[in-house]
Amino acid sequence: MHFINAMLFIAMTVSSAYQEFSSAEWNKKSTLTTDKQIEFPGIILGPGTYVVRLKEGSEKRSIVEIRSQDGTQALATVLAVPDLQQRPDDNLEFTYYMVGAGHPQPVQTWYYPGDLTGLQFVYPKPRAREIAKAADEHVMASNSIRNDDVIVAVTPNGKEVVIDDPRPTQTARQKPTR
Image (cartoon, rainbow, N blue to C red; front, side, top):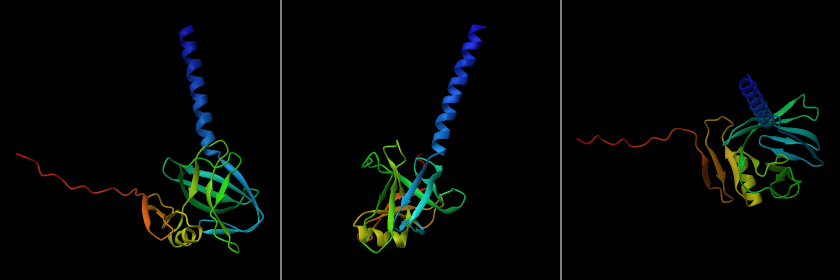
């Protein structure tokens, strides 16, 4: 009887720990307050307060939602990829591309509090080329937020380097030897 009780206790402990871990991943959200225009892929936001939350995450691609301050209105749904660079500052949640005065500042990366790596936003290819040239940095780009679309890094000179291509690759078949 003691053995059964011990096994039930262990099962409940492991189950609750797993639930806490998996729910923490899906509850990731931050509040972004800005006094100037900023840009996320596909949307320019005016000064104000917004909620940025992880809608769907994986090790290669994540879907992030930008919502109104009260969280009731979804303003944009954008694609992001892991940014494997070390977090620049423990208190910094968002980094931006420096594109010059007079333009909305594009958001580069979101660092969720407590995470060492962030999520880098994926811009439409034409806009990524503009940002890369103006900021003199690589910018993640894709044609859409679909899971089957290729993600590239656009260099400041406009070259595209494939980062993630989910399409199946074809390999040459070998003839059987006799």
